[in-house]
Image (tube, rainbow, N blue to C red; front, side, top):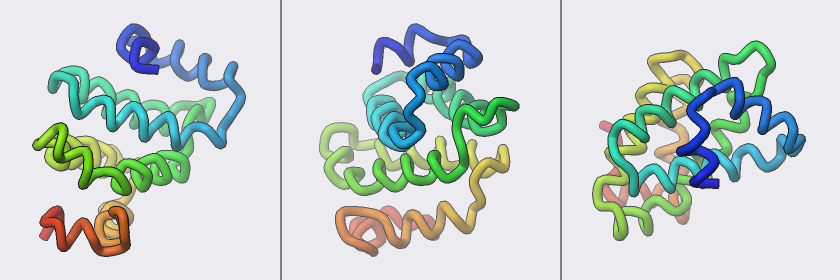
Length: 134
């Protein structure tokens, strides 16, 4: 999966591969894997991923839906507390991906706020952990 993402910079190619796999139920898991993997990558690769996610949601062929993206983000937040142990800036990196998703209007700020409030290993644990946005 990681090799696929880092080697396939053509968004149309990725969209076609997603259609060929023909498993929309797997898309949230795929998003979670990509985002979690990005915590160990360089800023440029994380920026490419954020742009890719936005463009897949906005694509004419609906390669990825907003619901699938949000479910993928929910999954990332479930393991974020552990991810911070391996990648101390994971929350910051995820925030940048969230920010791109909001500014590009593929996910609302209200939805991101809900994810943070309700996310984590247990509902509300991210706020207790110190990941509240404000």
